[in-house]
Length: 212
Ligand code: NYM
Image (cartoon, rainbow, N blue to C red; front, side):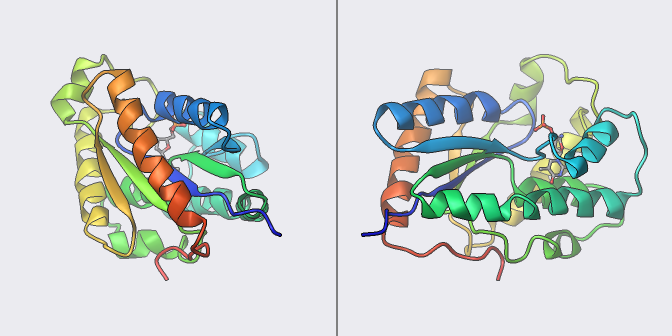
């Protein structure tokens, strides 16, 4: 009999919400409970496209805004064959950012509609759950200064949060809000419970196509 497919679990949220820490903790907890699981992150800076994106984020290069948006999207599409293979083999993928960051960050720039920003990601593997780590701008600020990369300033992040809220109105995506203001362990427990639900549900449902 074919293995039950893994779940596609995405963590989203504004910067400083704790996504990367929580992704790592979740993968470890799932593995310890006997669920095959791996972490992925977008942008994946290791590929040729990812290196272009990384140089842009580090302000070592300039790219036209539509162009960099499409590169972020292409960086997801180039990973799709590997993602599908792993999911089919029964591995759950825990993904640090996905198309929602793509749409929220670009559409926070002047002149970009949310609709245009989602187009290039239509048809990507659809997450079984998107866990949105919610943190107010004031709480994010209390976690210390932003870094030096592009987009890391309070005004831009608050525009990004507005766009995430608009994306969360779309009921075709299984959004679950996680209060990220608690302790690392409490946030982890909430994420682990919600992820187990998604893993069990995924076993009886085919992988969907995002925004289609
Ligand atoms: N970002 C991330 C985008 O602007 N578009 C995307 O499609 C994705 C996946 O890149 N500020 C932005 C959000 C972050 C930055 O940072 C990546 P990190 O720390 O590698 O997650």
